[in-house]
Image 1 (cartoon, rainbow, N blue to C red):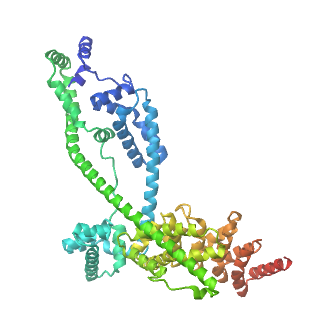
Image 2 (cartoon, rainbow, N blue to C red; image 1 turned 90 degrees about the vertical axis):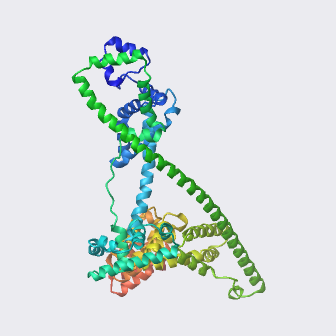
Image 3 (cartoon, helix red, strand yellow; image 1 turned 45 degrees about the horizontal axis):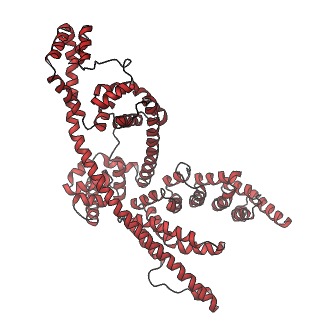
Length: 593
């Protein structure tokens, strides 16, 4: 009540109240940033903090919007910046220039948001595209109108299993935890529920496969809802930055109660002066403010509970992460020691065979235990089945094998290094062969494994080869990823090699990409791979492929010339004059040399 009444007091009353310790409400131009900040720090003044927000909001929002180019994300950055201000206000130096501080914090926060959003968007885009590789639009149009009725026909447990697995895209392990069952039991429950849904649709004349139904529901059942700003920046920052938000309102009431008789007399005089229209107008302003205070108090209670719950979940996750890291370190050490011992045994056997004069075939002795390729196949099947920890073991295996190869290849010839690579990486090759075959059959788990592997340097090359096989099988999503290596941070040499299956099947997009590589003088290191990739399409009479091989035929690199000969030979056999002339030119150059 004191805030609005003071404006109508005579000068002597205003001066008297200031002498009694009251701070009059000033305009933004009269109070500096440090003064407002000190009022907030010392008195937890919501008015002071709101004034700071109003004064600098446009600066912070504009700086964030220029960097992020998204109004929604810019609002998120603004929220975060003023929350940081509320939390760090006590630690700011007295000579801090608040405008400069807010600008720097906005820039750092915007950069972090850009990085986070880029990673999230790439993961979500790749995952959603590969998961929906076998889903058709017609499947979803057929089942969309009856989906909710079909879900209602399921019993409660089956309906819960389908909602968790395909509406919220939770893993079987999470579904089992919610239902109080194991992974296998949860999987059986989900399969049975999907079967009942198919039966429901079949009775109504809609025939849809199990995989088509599952993918259609996963990709389309949940649509993104528009997100708005839930509360003002001031209220959110105050709730997050201070644990005594409600205390400030209570302190104001306490001051009013404990005022001296003389202070009450000042207020009474101001009310008399502001009688009539002034009182009526100010009461209209006070009522919404009181409602806002009540709303803030109601909102604070669940927020405190949520914060406590999140802190408990964070502590539990930290504990589990520490246990998992310890297990991974132990498994990595064991695998590394095993590979080292195997390499030492192999070297000893080769040495013994060479000393005895025995041929290499006689030196090989069957090891006790499963072959490395069998180990890789078992690990690949575990990944495809979605077993817990299987993908982590695959990552550990890749890192361990790479470390062992880099250690043992020192001093070896190129031929010996090739044999060492075949031996060392045999389990990894076998594992990805299983994952690739499962992905070709439409397994969502295998597709997820390929997506995750793209994010891991030691597995990225194998994942790219899997995408090549999918593209050769006609998968447009996989082909689109390969045709945009910079967007997905892929090594171009692996992409050129992976595009060969698609080019062999006559995919013009893949052929055009390889032709571009062959015609670019900056990519001479990739000409050999491009020539091998265009071999079959040139033999089939593709004009662009033939022209690219003809252009490469004049290369001074003997390996590139040898690579173009098979494709040109096949094209010449089909009466292509350009190919025949290029082959004659190659023969002439070799005779001169």
